[in-house]
Length: 127
Image 1 (cartoon, rainbow, N blue to C red):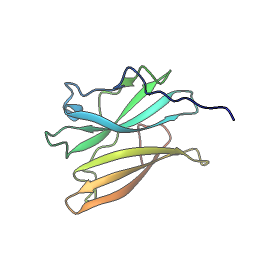
Image 2: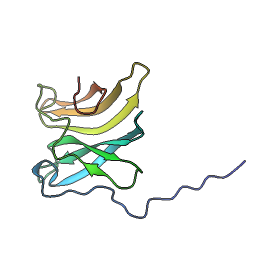
Image 3: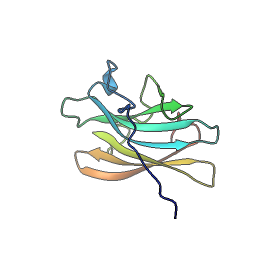
């Protein structure tokens, strides 16, 4: 049996918080796929409050999985309904046979946490 060696990427982190308000405190907990177009697509949690209790999901794209281009605005934003007023956390992505990518994430509100499910074909518009 052949052994597999796994090493942590030496140039971590891949993404960092920056001057954009919506990701000014931290970026973390991502989900990544290689889409049909050959691009790596990453959805990541971006916190914008000091205590990191408010967060949205951003989209980053990569050709090689190492260098990432981050869109200027979040693609999944909290506040769209009563079950998601405080944040969207820990996105995970599954490509399904119907041509959609399904995103499973924690939807946070004053009432607590629930599992949110979104679907998309282009990572810019979500149902």
